[in-house]
Length: 77
Ligand SMILES: [Zn+2]
Image (cartoon, rainbow, N blue to C red):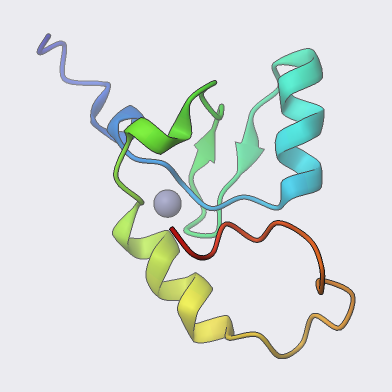
């Protein structure tokens, strides 16, 4: 449990949803908001959100993305 290279896998990073879906299909890594190259897990809800991704995500706010309405943005409970 302590191989020293898996700490980043303990977080769920924010990644554009389209890229997550593409990654789920072919297993390619994606680039998270924090800059981490990461392969999303099947069950991100069991990991805490990456603090850096969260900060960046929140700093982006809801503006600047005028076609994101109505989708699942991971908000709420
Ligand atoms: Zn992150």
